[in-house]
Length: 110
Length: 112
Figure 1 (cartoon, rainbow over the protein chains, first blue to last red):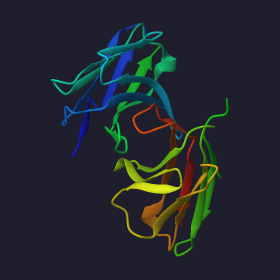
Figure 2 (figure 1 turned 60 degrees about the horizontal axis):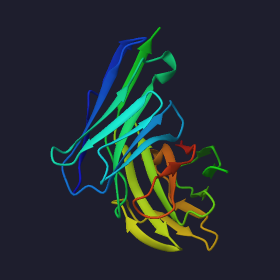
Figure 3 (figure 1 turned 90 degrees about the horizontal axis):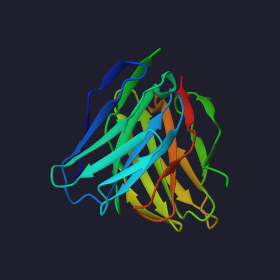
Figure 4 (figure 1 turned 120 degrees about the vertical axis):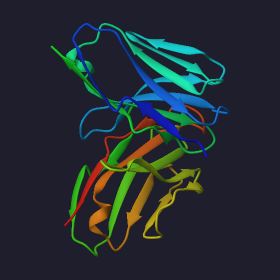
């Protein structure tokens, strides 16, 4: 059974800093890995989907990597801004339902 | 292109009542999944429908049920509501299994 863990649970950084969010999973036979952002009380916004055949995916200031052998994915955010403050969730996805981590709550301080 | 639409956005119900939530997926998406989100438990999977068939079911009591219609719209029903059912209910839409998932804004259910 796939289990997804995200560390740290919360992170506070000053504006402009580059940062990395971590996601680990127990089953290396992962299909795809998807990163989401959630603002308080809102739904999830898809940020990046990394297919199992890929090692990384980029969108603007975001870069996500996937290392199946080590069971890890990272989300790199460059030049963080206060508007990046949100909870970031990763999920393994495939022929089974999405399995989510508990998320990392990011605060970017101006 | 319209996103995933969930209605209603907010609901307040009394213990013992029942409730029906609706989800309209992105056009062309045949997979609809439902999740319950609470501060303590995070996101928990309820069930997934694909082309009107329930494909997967999470570990929730039988009070939670769902269905999917021929136009891919899905409904979720919770009977005999309990205080612990208060949560944000999220619906996800995918074209096929393993493809990118898109979520609606959720329905905030409060049971009093």
